[in-house]
Length: 285
Image (cartoon, rainbow, N blue to C red; front, side, top):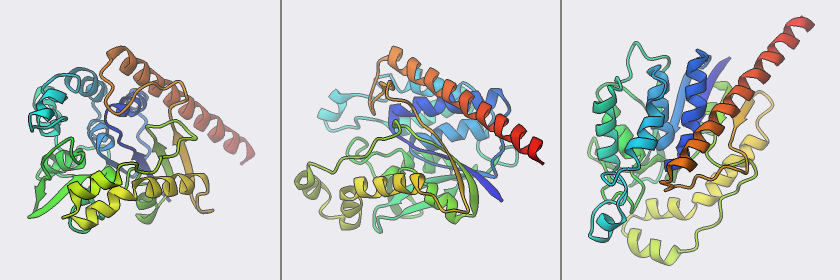
């Protein structure tokens, strides 16, 4: 029975997953056959599969809070609001994040949204493609003005088409799936309120526009899958509680640190519960 680790994106909300994965690494918790994520979930997983605790925390709290990454003024002048190209390449060079390869703890699959088809494509990260995949998967439409090109095809943020790729993990054969969310349990994504503006901006890319307009519907269908998973699949959900105060573009380091700490606590609870269940099963056997 294959097991998988799925991590949601969410920009700065990814600090919760950074805490979860750091706690996993400290406990040498690598029970998964593969990992799959989009956007910030993918970058968080890049440090997890490389067995390098603390790096995602640094990326989010130190580098993503710099003006080189987030700049509303630059956006007003026609540039990126969130320069994900700078963030990934600067982080990789400064922190020495190794490319996925034979020494990785497990294969990592990165979700990216194909602009022409509107579909999410899940590509195994390698030394040759990891840079392009990470930038594309984090390229939030509008906030990052470019649509990265990979093999002559345009892509944007993987979260546009599949924010929580748990169904894909199931389709890949996983029947024991751990899902790390970036929103509290009970959250549901509201419908888009600015459809007219999106139609004006992306009317020339109909498949992408359709996916953007259906994001809430797709997201909430995935939440329903988590709540009512197939009978042959065990799903463990790790999510922040209602006290989680980090938003998509939160730059307050105190809030980010609290969100990170909450991730660590939730990971510890999950591993403790798993150990209790294991011991109970062993006793019954």
